[in-house]
Length: 215
Image 1: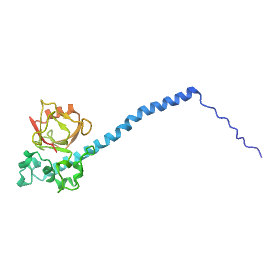
Image 2 (image 1 turned 45 degrees about the horizontal axis):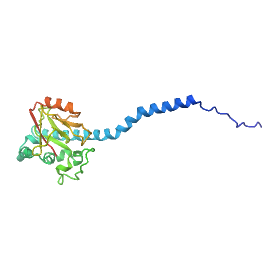
Image 3 (image 1 turned 30 degrees about the vertical axis):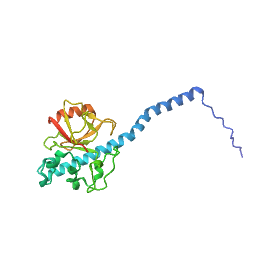
Image 4 (image 1 turned 180 degrees about the horizontal axis):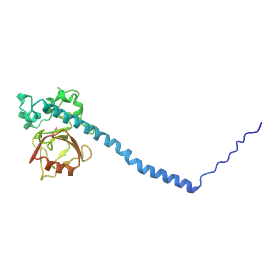
């Protein structure tokens, strides 16, 4: 029987080859790490967008059952919230759509530090992440229907209602989504917007002054 040779010689990497391997690893690290680091920030933003899509759909379903009008356009005696819109409280607008929303979980943005409301009877504005556009309508598809509560005009809300006009420095605070935000428009669609796009959307809304009930 022939003896099996176990003295195999392995050629060691040269210094140049080692440097090449290190360089390749460095390039891969530089390419993939930014994408990995942004995943935690993008995930809540996507979930927030999905929440607003469900909220927009709830508004549309409600309008379909109420002569194509949103709660803010219908008197309280007819199942709407028009009579109390001026108080700036947000929860009533969502309570009349509780059947369409199914769960208050969709009213809290994952990037918001607020506490989740466990059920609709106990829901308060402090459990909500999204404003309600008091002048929104289904017939005006570019109107501001709902969106992240970190929207600002550079000042403070007046009696819980934020007034936005095209000649104001409107934008987003850093409280949620790091200075950007999401909007649900009159047709129920959802747009991710920077401050610049938000100003363009105000001009496209067709409303001289947009009244937003901020939670």
